[in-house]
Image 1 (cartoon, one colour):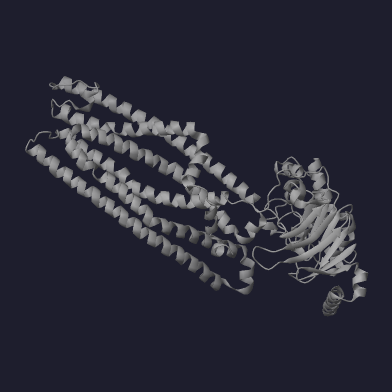
Image 2 (spheres, rainbow, N blue to C red):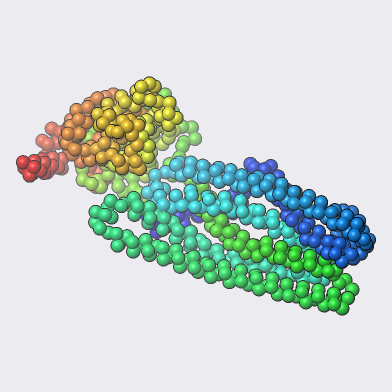
Length: 638
């Protein structure tokens, strides 16, 4: 199992370049929207700096009637010189009110515009990234799904991509906030008092350095947290999906303990990271507190002793209004560093996954025939899963078009694996698999797989209606069902669904369902019996109208009556098709054109049912054992 229950640590190995740069590349198509959002965001921040300047001007010029000009006078927005008389003071106050109203109007309009533009851009990046990641996962080869669990993939598609959207949405605006606020306040403070401005701005490089150290401290923690979350998700998914087994064996306490262990690991990792975070933020607050005291003491002494460059009363008040606004975004830098590290960890997993290449790939010039006859040949095929021992050893088998091949043998003999090589779910280690004389590795994957239908032992049904699950076998029919364009009364799509269901002996039980073909089957088809699910899977495969069909123990879970119904129509189901039937019940394949008996990855016997019985070998022994078992079962029932 990869990464101990699906941690997906191995996908980081395929990461190309810095993950945040890869994330920003997804934002590039929306650069105009982002640029407008940045401009309006800066405008919002600058508009927020105006009210404290108005307050300072009002204190000095309106309340104290000082002759101090101030920034607004220097900018020509209010008259300079000493203000005397109630009328002049009221006139100046009214001017300040108008400036304040304009500042708040600008702030409100630009705040709406910036948040809408930046958040909508982040949502678009999230949408594109999730679509691309999902599509990429779907195109990865089956060996990836064998070694990675669904919980880990769901964690990437949901938690990780959502975190990246939040990072773009929130932290990008926070970066603008820091740059605009610190830059604007620095200019204003320096204008009033360079000495006090130096004191007020001294923590800025300290906070920047501390944030860099914080990133180094916290990075290993958040990598570990992400892996722990993936393991916890996988454990929860396994347990929720296996509820029936847990109840059957009464393993509630055991599974509760296993979930508790994973939860405790997550708790310990989060608490350790929380300890570092809280210590970091506390140190930032202490630093800013020291600066506040220094500005208060030094600025106050200058005013008391009327030192050169001493601040006016209004400017002194402005300093403290700005100090609060200056350190609020600076303290937010630490939180942003925390969010950055979380986003970087998520981006490593997302873009590492996007950098993972499928092991089964399209050829440069794919063979895409108009039709497939169905000739199949396995030539000296050897195959193993990764570095394990070979599952198939030197298998050679010629199957003319229209032939029905039965495959028998003990569990683990390699029957299913052999047929997975046919649609290129895996590629051979050595040898060749051919369809119509052409190596399957030369086919376009879509062209090849559209001609091969597989009915598995435990067929997967999607949450939806009966008709939608059958329609999955044909793209056009599926789209008609999904869009609601097909009904029981009209529409060629629904007629084709019904015909496929009848051919699979499924129409009768479907008609007895509460809503017929529009009945919801539940998650994974849980509302249907095993036999009903298999008949729907057979109908789905038939609707695909393939040249080659594979039945992988497709009647193993049906009752005897249902099996007989399927057996009666088997010749009709495989008519004009090449068929491979893997059977646990040998009665299913006794009429096959040829039966292949496999054991330990090799073909040990081959022939018709009668020929193999006469041979008195492996097949005859299996047949005899099943016959004795069925006789015993009948005797018990009687």
